[in-house]
Figure 1 (cartoon, one colour):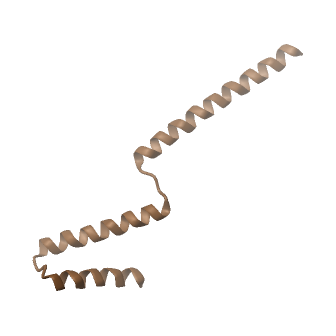
Figure 2 (cartoon, one colour):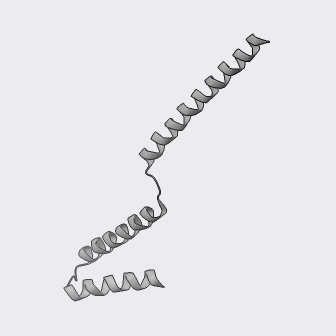
Figure 3 (cartoon, one colour):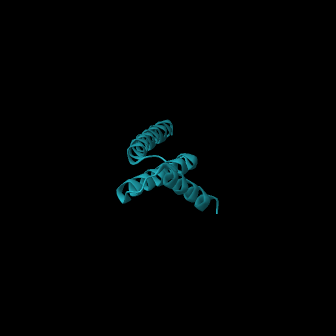
Amino acid sequence: MKNSKFIIDKLGKLFEQGIISSKDLSSELFNILKSKRDEIVLKMKLTSKDEFEVLSKRVENLENKIKKLELKKKAKRAKRS
């Protein structure tokens, strides 16, 4: 209900300002919805595709380093026996 009231209020303001052309109305509505989407994404703390790829590469590198360290640790134990 809150979201629909927000959109209705925005549309009412557009009509008050005299935006009558359908192109202007559609572009203005698109901008409102886009800003609302960006606000929701920001609240959810989602990452972009580029950020996700960078983070996944970092995690992959860290996993590889951990595996190498575990192998070194096992090799040292085997030499002591």
